[in-house]
Image: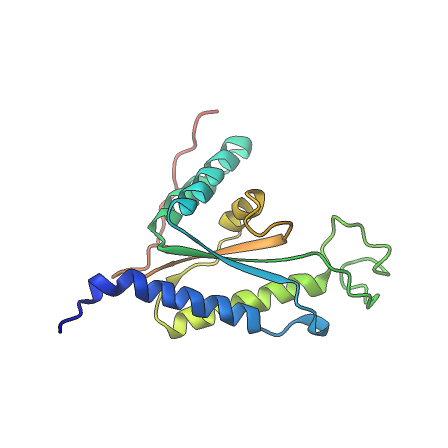
Amino acid sequence: MILNERDLRYELVMDAVRRMMTAARTAPKGKGVDIIEVAAVTGEDIHHVSEELIRMNQENGMKFLLRDAENILSADAIVVIGTHQHKHGLNCGHCGFATCEAKPDTVPCAINSVDVGIAIGSAVATAADMRVDTRIMFSAGLAAQRLGILGDCKCVFAIPVSASSKNPFFDRKPKEETTK
């Protein structure tokens, strides 16, 4: 039997994506409270995220959104990681407010933000171990958040994943702005 890597590439990337999702899930959490959500976006749903990035550009004119909209189309999958908002009751003031009760709901708990960051770091470390190409994107994460991919999660980030001869998520050229 002969197995050609080109024929197995998508399957190998999806194996890495599953392991990345597990790494994000098992990453340490503040106070041991698991408020992280993780999903993989594939196929036509990647196009939905790309289209949302284009809509976001049309709303605010930020050119990098167009670049990222095109760039994620090179991904075989996108790992999306976010956090539910949860007050941990520490009254630590790390969010800028003296108590958890004084913190407005629109301000994220610092512990939640750290948790999602640790989960992202664990996921991309796993990707590196598996030798797949990635890039952490807040833009595609915000598009995924706006599409409700992780329900009511806030602070959502996206990690497009690919396996090609050159990482498509670096050395990216800026795109022209769309007309409104």
